[in-house]
Length: 208
Image (cartoon, rainbow, N blue to C red; front, top):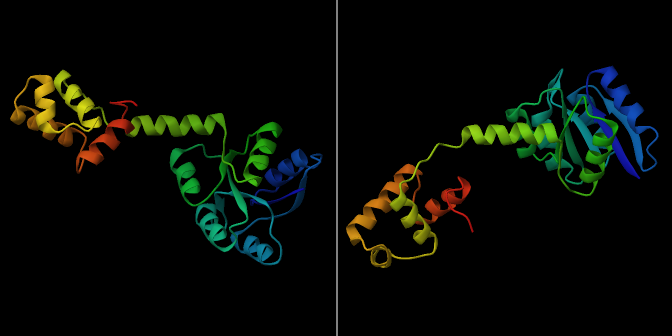
């Protein structure tokens, strides 16, 4: 039986979620809190398996509380609960230890799937939420344009070739290869060769 607790200051939200879960045979709705303080007080005496945690609360915010609870009660898995489908909120909750992020307009199927996955330590991400994160990441990725020779040099760097070996393969001088290498470091804002390769994979300039 998965014990579920909700912290949200909107009565209708709590009742709505409770009604969605009440007939689930393997989920036990053990109660709710409406503030950070009341949530803390409840957890001192009883811990759920999964905590549905609102982002905005009257006396604090769920993002900070998420981190606090995960540190004090690592056995509790937390699902962020919000009307805000914004990348900054989602990332902050996930970075603070949440096992997923559920929108308040979630269907019964989405909600129960999130709870089941969280209860076994897996991450749940609704399609809408995943799409928001993907869009945000695309917007943050710099537009990097490489010339043909830069691409050739980058591919050989990935394979571990030295400047001299690359010069021989590409019929270029060592100095020219070194110029391309420095240009790549500058374009990707890389600290060194290892960082260059890491960033090139990240921005999909090279593949396995």
